[in-house]
Length: 112
Length: 117
Image: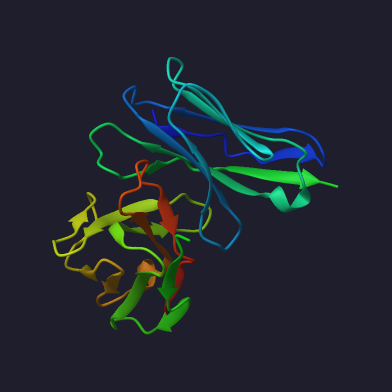
């Protein structure tokens, strides 16, 4: 089992729709969870982080965390073509210091 | 704020030569810097963790004598790929954490694309 798992996609959604990106992790004691966006050929950029169960909203983005199910998701409302990218889930594991373990990413395509 | 730069953005070198990549935190002091490598269509793989004034901690399978890391100050870390070979061709990305930030978010540099001929 991978430490951080994401569906590689591509996930295709029409413009204006809600995109739902999912991530599961294996270390039950993980504390912090991050979502990064990576455009092709570019480095990752932080979208948001979450460390408490529940929802956290930032503009069109909502992160959802369920530690009991070891599941974190990212919702993108009113998806735009410019949201087309690979979304990386990253987890800070217990005892890992401030290292992040990344999933392989989900490719999102927002279609006109 | 929290801007990280890398230099050079891309480099082409001959097999057997050494290449140095710089990572700088421009507007903050970085507690820790990280070096990653990313091959095409793969995720980021952590190579090493670098703290100012101390030796870097390398991940399993990463040769410390081949990938030399120097963290001379709170704003600068360098990665030197020694005796580079074609299989070292990759996208090298650094990140830095902001001193004093509770969640210790990693802010990424723009990356350096290395091609070894």
